[in-house]
Length: 380
Image 1 (cartoon, rainbow, N blue to C red):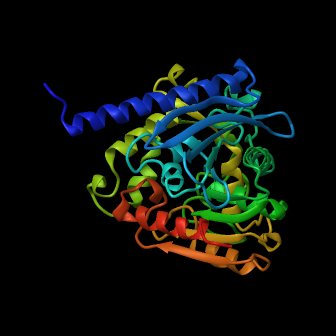
Image 2: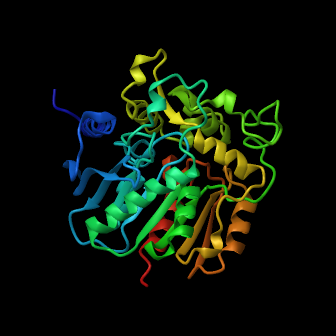
């Protein structure tokens, strides 16, 4: 029988999924000691609608291998190169470059003429993992605190600057990635031209409904301290564990009205496939360092881990109205502290969730992309 357009679309997405996961596997093997990649690990591995994807490794100042994926259109490019930073649990490609419709923020930005890069902080995805992550998590202090993550951001920034010939970059960080992006921009203001902080904590505000005092993140024996014993060096995350926080923020019983089931499925699968050891456990699970959760706990309990007053970049602060991670006060406090930024904009997306870049276009995704395009492509 001849294939229908729907059949062809399904085959296309399946092929792209296999291609993307193969790319992750190449980088994961290199990051785990399977070989050094001094240039592209998988150059121009796939093309989708005229987009070119290239994977390569940068090297942090302490020798860690940092995985980076470039996504760009084949034609003329505009604006600063944009680096996307993942959050505290799911690594970069699984967060920003899923091989399904409306699942790749990287592709959406690249199709608008931007040169986009996705990075993995150490301990995540295809980047080097601390040796402690090859042992059980118990008895190890939380791994990969902000100082190490920001060192890795610096490695990616310098690699992208060298690769593109640009003096400055744009950083876009989601959740904990926004915290890392802001911290880096505060330490290296000359290297960051545009900064997007998306659904992120900033502090110093004491109080959070799910992350701060009285939550599972707090040590019951030492109030005000992170619960290191419960988290250990890293956490094991199943595919099913990725959906409850997303589901609870969608105000409809039928979640498919808000989120395409194919996007959710690809998100869960890509997260599992980001860790080459995931299938060795039952149920399958991927590892994520606990250090970002420790930093988030302290941000949620009133500590300020970096000072926005040194940032000079144009800054866009994005918050979804139904976000469970950031607080409205994070936006207003950050806005007030950005005293040297060349420009400060805010974007609140009505009724949108923490995962708005993966939701359906009419549920806030289209508004997010339009806001990002307007900010990142603005003529200077």
